[in-house]
Length: 173
Image 1 (cartoon, rainbow, N blue to C red):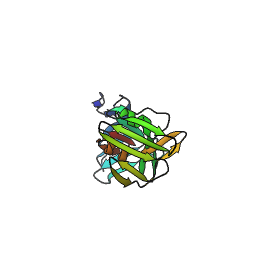
Image 2: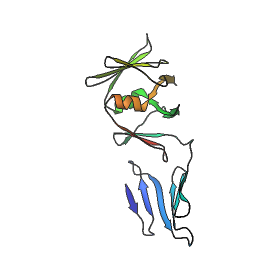
Image 3: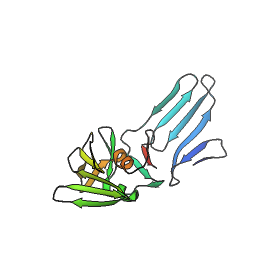
Image 4: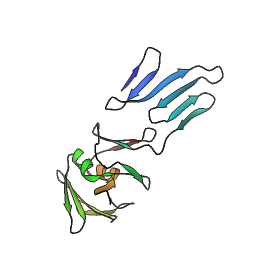
């Protein structure tokens, strides 16, 4: 969502209506530039002289939106080996799937309609339907939450994933 104020600046808001950026256009005699100040501390400057530059905060938490709604969980999403890991139960439930834990072999079964995914804690091997695959990084436990790669889980359940590196937002659609 975008809107403008009376001063000519443009503002953007996340799906919850929280402001995330402001665009103010400034005419400098040498550069004719546009400047974005994002709520996360990132600055983006575009000018005829310097092109486009973005400076952001890589330590800012990752925010996950599932079907337009912010994912709420006690465990935060995090980057591990350049992949976004999320709490499995909260994410799968938000996607409409059922989750079953098997303590004997430390596996988790995720079911959505006819699709069944089986993952094991600390094992790269996963099963989607009857096919076996290897993940780059194995699911793991963090504070009693099973953490899994978001893109793998979402795509295996038929969803698309978009990453916004400037705002550190992940959108699952």
